[in-house]
Length: 496
Image: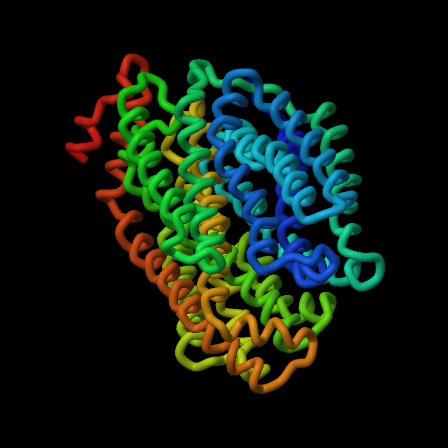
């Protein structure tokens, strides 16, 4: 691909960011609308979990396939296909007559979404070849997440209160159509010189593991952890995981290439992505229920309360991108780990949600942490790896994000549902009371400890995977992708 002018590169970045805005805005808007949707569709808490996790699970399961497909058939073509499917899925969601239909249409959205963000990131990686310029572009990319988090609660609250929850899906239509037209005109086509072959068996095993594990976590509070169905799902998830590891280790061109994980920074970024987005998914889900079911706020006022968190994401994401470009990922990851841990501890130990000031401080700290963590995840995932593998590397990072968000919603929702206090609080509707607040605080305490634990893992990995030894492992991992290096080779990684 020939070198593009600076103006053209900026335009390509803007178009790719539109796809991220499309997906990110959809998630933040949906969270604000959950209580209204639950009442309208007569759904349970687990039903609301499925409106989120049906999307993130399908997304996570297909991201690797989409990344490798884009490397093989063309990134621009795959990106355009994703825009069409996601926009169509959004239109169908707005017409859903029941919870079952909504969950199904969310899965259609996810099929399209799997072709957007990782493919857009691989396009950016191939367009921005200079490392510092690439890091800044990724910082802008991360800033779009902040924009969506800032705008999503307000836009969602306004739409839900004025028109209804179905209108939250309408905003995807003009953005999707505009992105599709601009992509056709300005985004260059690119492919990997040596793309990998399809891996249908590995793909099915990934779907089996993610689907059965998440189903078991979400449904266990209602059915019982000793239910034959839950035990069977857990056994299938474990068996599928063992089969996946064994099968992929023997393939010449696996779906999940173990050579990436010989890099300590890449492996660390994968775990950090899971932890950060698990914290985010659980945080948004829990606070949406708290603000509307316990405090009795409507969708708009709940969205306004979450603005401090969203504003910090908006400010810190581009700042983090500049820090990563100038000084590497360590500082951003350390700040993120400390802030997320502190936020979780404040809620778990000091019950800060019982006061307006405390709630505000907790939200600001979480927004600071999440705003700082996204740029180092993405930059670490693609930096040091061959450009020919950009789609797959970006897809691994994106898959980790979606797996984390799925697990965060599933686990946090299960923890809340397991407390009898949640049912009592939810039954009070909008009649906020000190008793409802106290009951929710008690039920949510273990969930906040989980979020604090996620922050502690981010902090630890920020220390361990950003030093000289870690950079050495990245060079060894990149060498494994050179011409003639077999997929199963492990000596370099072992020596590192």
